[in-house]
Amino acid sequence: MVIGILKKIIKLDHEIWRDPKRFKAYLLDFMPEDRVERNLLLLCVEIGIPKRIYDKDSIDKFEFYSLRKDLINSIGCDEEKASSLINMWIDAFEIELNDTDETINNVNINFSAGKDIPELIMISDLGDGIEKLPEYIVNAFHKVHIYTLGDLSDFTYKELKKIRGVPYADLDFVIAKMEEYGLKLKKEPDYTGIYKTSICELNLDEALRKRLLDNDIHKIEDIINLDQEQFISIGNKDVETLKEIVTTIALMGVPYNVRKHLNKAILSLINSQSHMLSKRDPAEEADKNNKWIDPGIYLPKTFGDIAYSEPQGWDNKESSYIEGIYYYPYKDAVDGMIWISRQGNVMSQDDFDYEGVINGLCKNKDDLIDVIDCSVSNHKGKIAHYYMKIDKNKMELRSYIIPLNKYVYGFFFGEKNFISNNMLNFEKEFIEGVTFKDKE
Image 1 (cartoon, rainbow, N blue to C red):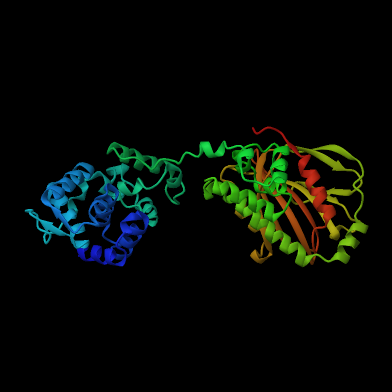
Image 2: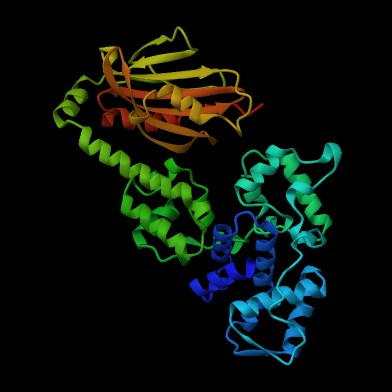
């Protein structure tokens, strides 16, 4: 019985109603199938019924009628339902009812009448005929605990768009129905003021502040707009410096979902540094340095939609199976290579399947070191850092994946066993010199 469950929850935590999310979680645990009952109790919390009575020893009929009136005005139920709901909370808090005609023993609510209340209209009941939502879409909502129009009001539009299995057209249909009943989605938080905060106002080390300003970083929004590679660079590849920046903007109120790519950059750098320290052999590094061929002069080169500076001191050849060009910074090709490539048939840059491409490059998940966001000539992409066997030699590679104009461009930098400082320095200079034609 609902009253018994409510009593049990209140006994576990007398003030659980102060935290609607936790209260909802309790209800889901104890009443997983009773959607209408759950939502009526949650509406009482939202309106403030328990807040007004939880610390009282008794309630007279005038207070009771006031609570009932507010409940009726807020959710549109009739007097009987409102009285029964209030009686439930009074009984759960063990409050005495004085001088009233209402009985606390009569708490049997006609929950089937929930359709009279907009917040309790089921998602599955929306639309008729061809407009009726398919079962798979209704199930997609249920997976994230959205059963009624009232449940939708806990989410912003941006959050709802992330629900898997709900096409945008169907989501807009549900929201339109919601608005027909006078209900609204949760508002997107406005962080405009925080994002405009000057770097000079932040509690940062003076040397770090100067470095940021020297790199044209003047506001918090400039930090947020950095991709992972740029953020690592701006922090001079120092983990503690990067942590200081992220901690400072977090304390200013920048939400996690906005700064999570910066946190990923820090984790990526930690993994990369740990990898470099454990895998590098100083003697082999010195040997690589001796074998590295001077790239010589650079001449402009065009390849598809990109232009870059081509080193004239290295051997090169066109790849045979995928359109591209190999460059060899060592006399022996197995010691290291740079590969510029492009492949067609990219249907959408916004929904590009990076994971599929990376899985194709890195067959064994244990060989993947990390993946970070990047931009090349202001075009967004990913850098995959991983191991691969080529002609029985273990190679370490850093691969830039950039979708553009129905193609995916790849810039691969790899060496036998580990990537040397020479290769890392060349990679940085090369990528900075790449330019793309404008998108079609």
